[in-house]
Length: 374
Image (tube, rainbow, N blue to C red; front, top):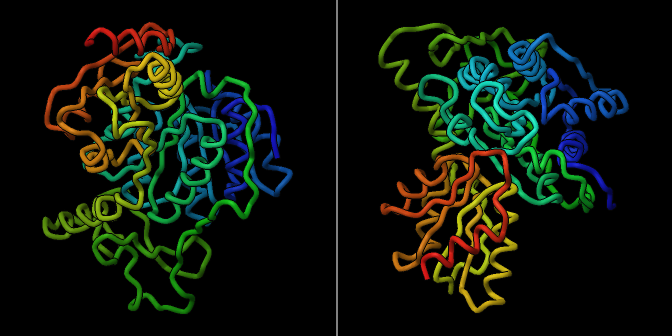
């Protein structure tokens, strides 16, 4: 089926297809259309939409719905994403599946509410305090936005962790033809639950092998168990025992770190024979795709490496794809957040093409930057 709709609405339809039945949010440009679409679509499938009093409460409500067994989502931008960070940390600590959509805009503070930016890449990883696991994905194309929304829910459920879906204002607001896949064209993953009938002595809430998520029950399954925001032991109860705290912290990290090869997803365009490789995400990657086509017509060997999974950062795939002889340019609507990760991965300095004035990076600007080095 084909439908014309903006990225925000595409996410709403995909979330419903993924099994999302709860949305809590607070209107904020440029993500408000997503909340509006969910308020219309959820009641049709027996779901619940609620507009909360602020972004902090929205995140809390999404967590609360998830621990009852519902697939839940919230959406925001800019200052709202900052406000959600305390409860994103709560979801990480309690290991609760939830999808957070961040349609990025210019900042900091109120910034540029109606203009695009990509300044939240590092905040998506380190926005909440302490060592914590996170997954963040950044689609670029209409059908990909749909499929990556479904994958965001799948990853949240599979690894019992918050997953951040990063868009920017351009992707959120641009009306495009979306080729909506049929249900059989994608997988739906639901969280694993412990079998019924275990008694308290047989069941440790957060006990698991390294690399696995915990096998937590939903509320109202008949289990007596404990969710805790404090550092806790494998039974879910608060502890300051150094050995227990260290173990549970490392187990939370390991469920993502040990499975990152399954989580990574990248798109390579004409990288193998390229003299110069552009690295970009979101709407900037779309400009880069056009720049590659323009460059090739002029006989310039330009390629594109596009991380679709941003966190965990695809350092190993990047090293495998790009040689030491290839020139690398990172194009992004910030002052170099992605560039820093690329340099760490490749263990060398790379070039940056950066804009922070609310104006998109165009294909022409990318091509001009490539020609500067010729």
